[in-house]
Amino acid sequence: MEHKKRFFSFYGIVVEVTTSSLELWERLENDFSYFSQERNNSSKVDVKLNAEVCTPEKHHLLKEKCIFSRKEMKVFEKENLRLIDYGDGRARALFDLIANTNKMQSEELDLLHEKAYLFILSRVGKQLDLQGFHRLHGMCLLHIKQETLLISLMSSGGGKTTLFSHLLNTNQFSIFSDDSPLISSSGDVFPFPIRVGFEKNGILPEQWSKLPFTTLKREEYGEKKLISISSLNWPIGGKYKNVILLRGKRGREFKVENGNMLIVIPHIIKEGVIGIGLPILIEYFWERGFNDFLKKTIIALKRTKALWRLLLRSEVKVITLGDDPRVNSIKLERTLSNYSKL
View 1 (cartoon, helix red, strand yellow):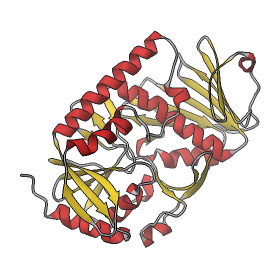
View 2 (cartoon, rainbow, N blue to C red; view 1 turned 135 degrees about the horizontal axis):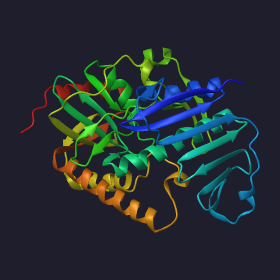
View 3 (cartoon, helix red, strand yellow; view 1 turned 90 degrees about the vertical axis):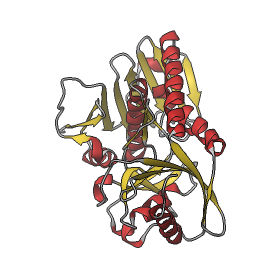
């Protein structure tokens, strides 16, 4: 069977993906379309993934002592090789920690897709962290006319993707990220547009229902509809002068109020410095030994510095979202259109 190879370049971090599954290849291409390239334009590859829809192979590492387990996942390790067993053999991955290569297998396409997607983000995220680019769990759009960056800080299930889709429909915004923009060590914000994921009962603008999507049945969090950034006819990135951090909450009617740092710091620490809410697999981010402990310490310090600098340059607002997402988006866009930084 013919193997397909694709490269993705995430701000210089190059990932090579090889698979003989056309459907898996198309899914990953849709996940990371903004970063995709047909051939490697550099001489290096930082992360290699071979993912196959097949019966997972048995491996001698299964006889080793389990070093880490969580729910239906077990990790076995010897020297530089790490075997991750999902669901007692429903999927297995053989990860070489030194070479940064992963061989992943499962008969279940959805399971393989979910783990492959999270593996890529886990390894890329760690390397970006070390280079001074840090993901923050939040929705990020640029109000083009006002040159104002809007970062909505809501935990998972808070409605940020619904707000994202309706704000884009006002045709006043460009995309930075639906889920996790990049914050540099100087506090600048960079686009990180990966796939857009909607919950099964998410309230989308009518025209969004006509866009091509993939349905993914996730292991822990249920079904999600995935739309590729390449399917969205909106600009990506752009220059900005101002940054507004929005702390969202639910209520009866839409309202925007002034806030302060203390309101957003808990979210920044939890979902920026610690990284809760970010798409990540701990089995690929966490490694044993002093060297990796030092790396994670450096990452924590770098994240803290970058997010503190973002805070210092940002204005904080508290937004109360009403029941109608279309009304929320229209009123928020009008508020931003009349915005002027004092």
